[in-house]
Amino acid sequence: MDIDPKFKPMIIGDNRKMEGVPDNAFGVVVYDPPHVGPQGRDKSRKKFDEDFGATVECGKEQGWTLSYLYPPFLEQAKRVLKPRGLILAKITDMVNCHRSQWPHCDFMRMADDAGFTVCDMIVKVRTGPMISTKWKTAHHARKRHCFWIICRNGRSCER
Image 1 (cartoon, rainbow, N blue to C red):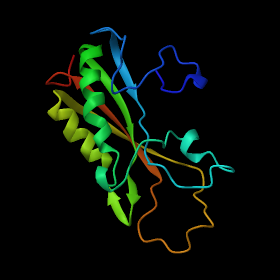
Image 2 (image 1 turned 120 degrees about the vertical axis):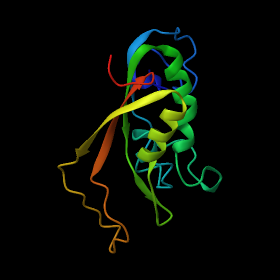
Image 3 (image 1 turned 60 degrees about the vertical axis):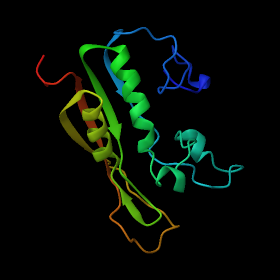
């Protein structure tokens, strides 16, 4: 499933709605949401927002975070997953407006609230260099990792 037809997904749609996807259809749902909001870059030269899915709002009204996307996705995941099915969620923390955001914590709390059990978390560390000529002074630790959070549809991790 992808919202952009250019990637030729089997299902074109928003993971917060999953229209046309039957109930209890999948044993696993993989979730890789946008990790940053629109970057305000020169769209004529760089396609950062489009290439990285950074097209949803992430401003003051949203608390400078994209965590507001999680509850509608989790509601749909609960519906389309088989009982005891798994979510594999790739979540990346970020810094926005000089403030660290912790979406991985938000996701785990919201998953629990939605009736999932957070069973495991894998930290994936990027191996490539993080080079930017834009930033001369670092005010926060650079985010060189993401989290793969594993959740079970139900109240225990074991099958």
